[in-house]
Amino acid sequence: MHAEAGDLLRGVASAAAGWADVSAGSLSALACDPARSRGRLFAEPPAPTRNAYQRDRDRIVHSTAFRRLVYKTQVFLNHEGDLFRTRLTHSLEVAQLGRSIARALGLNEDLVEAVALAHDLGHTPFGHAGQDALNECMAGQGGFEHNLQSLRVVDRLEERYPAFDGLNLTFETREGVLKHCSRAHAEHLELTEPGGVGRRFIDRTQPSLEAQLCNLADAIAYNAHDIDDGVRSGLISMGQLMEVGLFAHYHQQALDDHPALEHKPRRLLYETIRRMLSDQVYDVIDTTRQAVARAGVRTLEDVRQAGPLVAFGADMKARSSALKKFLFASLYRHPQVMHTTGQAQQVVRELFAAYVDTPAEMSADFAAATDLQRTVADYIAGMTDRFALREHERLTGTRLL
Ligand code: MG
Image 1 (cartoon, protein in one colour):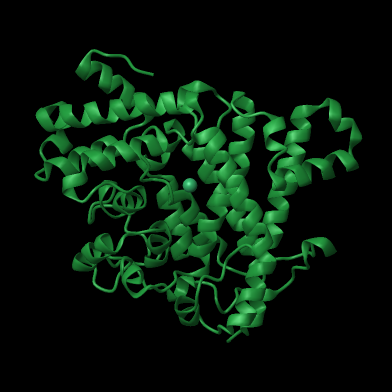
Image 2 (spheres, helix red, strand yellow):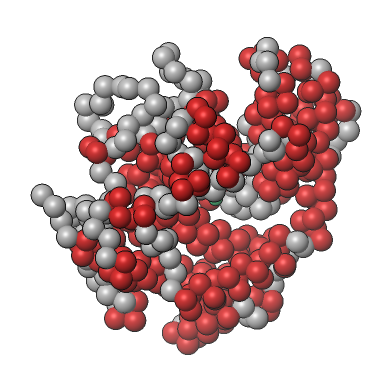
């Protein structure tokens, strides 16, 4: 059976016209089909009750790296408060948003879920501060990049199965996990996996629609939850947020519909964010339907050769970018966050120096490895915030953060 590409455009009216009832139904011709997966690096018999992408998702959820996400920084350090997002809750929110959109578009929800849950497995402790410090430490050895590290975690670093390193995930999940990659890194990947997940960064082609979707769901998720966490932390105020068009629009809409929210600021914040999230989701669905129709794509191969298809419309894109810029300037670069950033980078730098100097300070598996710098980077990248701080104190005698 060969469905028309128009199936992708099924079921969703514009946000203004209201949300039509959409059910998963049969997958679009443009969706990834687990029965037609490009497969795993090591051949395995299929699972009796789960398709290939469901199995990928289950392996990710059971991995050690996944459990560590709960103690890794998203924006606020793990110990700064119990209610802030961590890498784990962020990943769950990306999976939820991604699945909602995938269902409406007729894309493969299981694949979206697997990619979303795995997309941040390669993050260091202390978020981007940790990554930047580790990247500097590794400058002479090819650097450190968290997307590439996420792939390294699922391909090599997890140790659970008798016959292979890593989780041996399908090509499609691995493709989605490797969101970005420099040409130099892609050429390096080609050496061990010719025509593999690095290829598209050389050919400049697109990944599956499911992978494109996870990328956008990531941004929708953090733009929304960083507002919530930013206000909760006291680092950004509602007054500042009112200067952001996207926020101000839904804030006013929520107040018009529920004037009593004036006296319930937290509920007003939630309602504003809820409306903002919903409209971004509808916008992506509508815009993607239109882009697919315009591009005339009929098969997954057509999708790979076309330009990006999962996207915001021009207006939402501009409003979302303005919000992102605001968060960057007002939250991620807030003096209090920057102070933490400086200390976090010092922890990572000093840990790196200590382990390179005395590899035996690492756990036995790592201490015995041959490529010392890369091994130290893998070891540090795998740490939770609190383990990194404990190790730093043990090795330097200084307690930071
Ligand atoms: Mg993310």
